[in-house]
Length: 404
Image 1 (cartoon, helix red, strand yellow):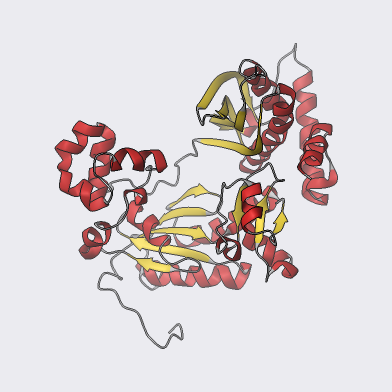
Image 2 (cartoon, helix red, strand yellow):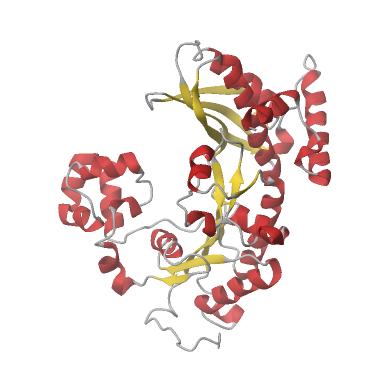
């Protein structure tokens, strides 16, 4: 039906209903769609040379460029890349359009970010006149036809395997992992495949001879719990393809944050503040786009010895204002930036969310906050209408000049 010469089959295709959808190189794909002159080129979405890569297209990835890579390193690997600073408001709106398409299939959609989500299509066969797999293929094609964007879909019987499947055949992939093949599929794969296992976690597992998921399974639940406690028991369950988490459409994002790695280590407090300000603006923009505000602020620093420092502060009331985020983060930074310690990364984030309508009200003695809220709302409106560069602060201009 799809026009392929070789039809593909899977014995469990009609009974699997848990899916993970991931937009392919989302920001970069949007930029290429909106500016066709970028189409044949490697494209990187990110900041100046001291920033980090937000995402990049698959052409740039062929040169070794990856998300979260320092920009200077990315441009060294791919000097011919076209760099786009990006437009978060545009990406958020595009994500909302695609999410509504998912919700046309099922109300059981759990967003993980603006460009990926889990879906549970159990019991939708009669409604859509076909299996979940058929509905998902139609969704994949609809997104391309209407938005000119590609997505990759993984289909399985739980969230862990659905997300694993969606990474198997990017871009525009559609991969399936069934119950009969799950254990054999997982056995030879690296422990880094498991959710929550980063480089440090993988190194800790490998020190105990656990390099592959099959090694965890062979160790047994008792040894894994003895070595790593509840985390070990959780990893053993995943090695057995056991993930009991349900698709929760009300699952909340834990934090909204932004961070950057420096081209060179920085010790001066004023320089760190100049870098901190645009990060606060990004967090505020993302909060505004998702109509949320945060009550807990976190400052993150990484020093030249790769030691990570986090400092948290409970705010008087929820906020989504860049100026308030910056003011509190600046105070936390002052306690750490002594002029002697060199830092290679700084980040800021908000958590403990509330509705945006409950944020930044101030009180009878605080007349400044409502004025700032109105000013930042006006700036956001102007940027949405005329572009990000329509309104700039002095600190933003100073930082951009340093990035050139």
